[in-house]
Amino acid sequence: MISKKAIEMIKHHEGVRQKPYRCPAFLWTVGVGHVIDPNHIKVPLEQRKTLPIPDGWDRMLSMEEVDAILQKDLSSFERGVLRLCPATASNQSHLDALTSFAFNVGLGNLQKSSIRMRYNRGDFEGAAEGFLDWTKAGGKVLPGLVKRRNDERALFLGA
Image 1 (cartoon, rainbow, N blue to C red):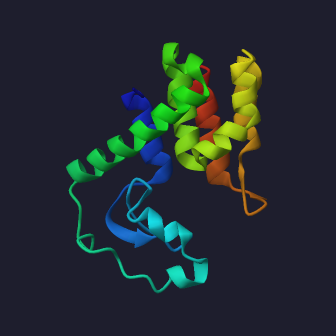
Image 2 (tube, rainbow, N blue to C red):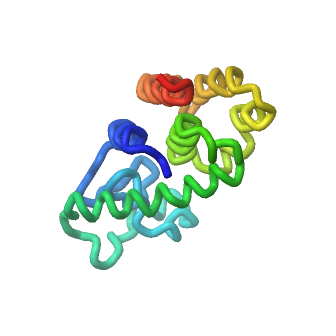
């Protein structure tokens, strides 16, 4: 299970919203980056703009609800990280950092990343440096991603 420190870092970088909003991909989102209806991901981008908020979600959530949703979301990412990088089971810092990374970029991207390849070969220094390769969105380096990757790298290294 990831640490409280890692959860706080994820909340810091993702942001916490108690009221549903449309993310940049026009998906109804709430809490800590939780997509309310994953089926909407299959809808073409332009059509997402017209999708109504799913029933029962047009309200302010309590922090307890936000934390419960986050815990459920994180548990699936933890399982994925443990499956893709089995050695994380015995290293809290590695589990924390790789779960934060996967939560942000997806398990599919972790699976095909040089971070995972290096990690599973035992090249932990190389894996740590690999975080810094994931600082772009839309072809541009984003300062927020640079900060997040540096934080994940530091967490990975036990800092």
